[in-house]
Image (tube, rainbow, N blue to C red):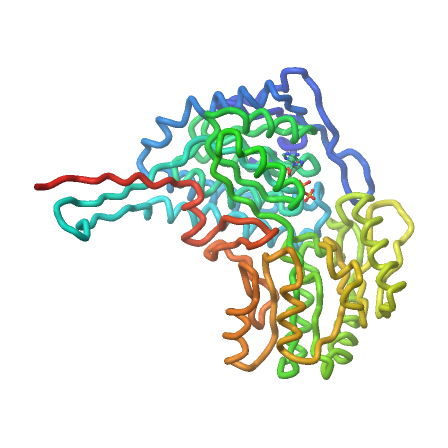
Length: 485
Ligand code: ADP
């Protein structure tokens, strides 16, 4: 399958009921290279009509798929894992081309993304219920798990492979069929993944893929259909709220992985060198285009200067350029709007009194580049501390004590992930208890792991992906009361 790249770029169309076919209206939209804005490929522009066909196919396949042996579903996922891994270089190239990240980062995503297929291949055979005596005696209580039914899986552009596998993996394992709707900016990786999973033995209709330039219309139509039973979404809080409202009509089950505003705390007792390493990872993974990206650096006043200087030195040494070129550390951002909004946040922060330690200047075109940037002395109420930056900018503020650090860390509508560097064991426990986030990275700048439950609280959404929890999102519980007297 050395033609996987070629396949994804050859406008294969929509995958519906096991067939690749054109959109009904025959429309296509362009997929652009963010390094220079040129066209990489065209993708089929699926309409509401196509989406309903895809749901029809998912509904038709649901009953038989739910009855397959768990081991069979697990083996298909395992073969999918092998397929993605065997084509790691092609997947990495495709991700890098359509999304912009460097090849090294894209390879990292392939490893991470494939691992969801392996993890859920193992989870497929571990779905079980319980059997108990009713507390008052006289009957027995049996619980069993069933697939929730046909799902709509909506993925974002920042991790085109991993955000797809961490929804598709558990859906397959649980016995659900699905319609996948990739981001219009990065649809190609999903097409390649669908082909690999089909070749891994997935029966027709289990996985349907509809690419479109009009996601809103498609999801609205599908969510108004009572045959759709579940929506899993990763993207902005704004769109997540629309989908939550939309789900009220037919009461679909929901998983919502939304925005973040991760605080990165460095305490006075931290290993500052390790904190800088962690900061580079937490900030620069995916060029800062991740909901887990460290958004606000809150550093104890006694170590802030040292931390800022070291971080600025590391950030200034990074080379920006086309993600597929040798020696490049930082690729382009996804589109011109991203560059403009980040530039505005930095300009405003400087206006508010922050000091630019490195970066902060948009280079001349082509491409959507923004340089790695560090700001120190950022006032607490500066806008950059209140919004998701989604780019390579590290704003540093100081705090005086742990209470202030916790208060400021929690002072956001978001609650996805927090990071903290400290060598005080008691403090780590206090932080884990007091920080209002779904995840906490202690002395590490990377929390994402297929074996761990990823997800947030507050405006970061609800539901968990990965871990033992991940498959639960695709299962419903049936309870059977049994009289025995
Ligand atoms: P981002 O800000 O990361 O681009 P979005 O929330 O806009 O995040 O997009 C995430 C996913 O949601 C993409 O697949 C996009 O096509 C889709 N999307 C955007 N708007 C809507 C909508 N109104 N209804 C359903 N899906 C949408």
